Image 1 (tube, helix red, strand yellow):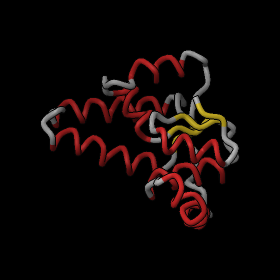
Image 2: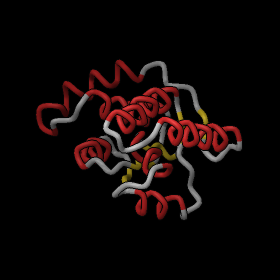
Image 3: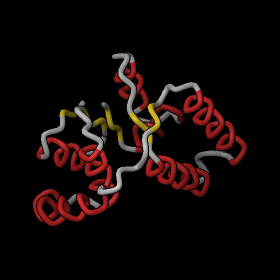
Image 4: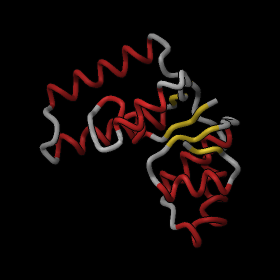
Length: 140
């Protein structure tokens, strides 16, 4: 299983500095899973784009429809948010937070990946990648 943080998915649908790397990762044929955490964070990320004037509301709805279409088509592997992810997130924060400076949502993504038994973790955030590697996940 592949786990990607939400910024990876945003870079797939909205052109940004990481879009080319996201597209290249997808050329491998591997497809990351998608949880309700991704959807919740996705909505906030898109709302921030609108708030900053980087995306129109109409375009955001079109992008959201593209995401929903891809989910329905099975492009992203839908999985349930793991029940023990919050407890694992707390443990990771206490153990790695002082050294790596990771934030709660970043740690929650890594905790979710670990609880889902992911083998790979895709992110463009170096601190999050450092945490994933410290926990034995392969990063790309």
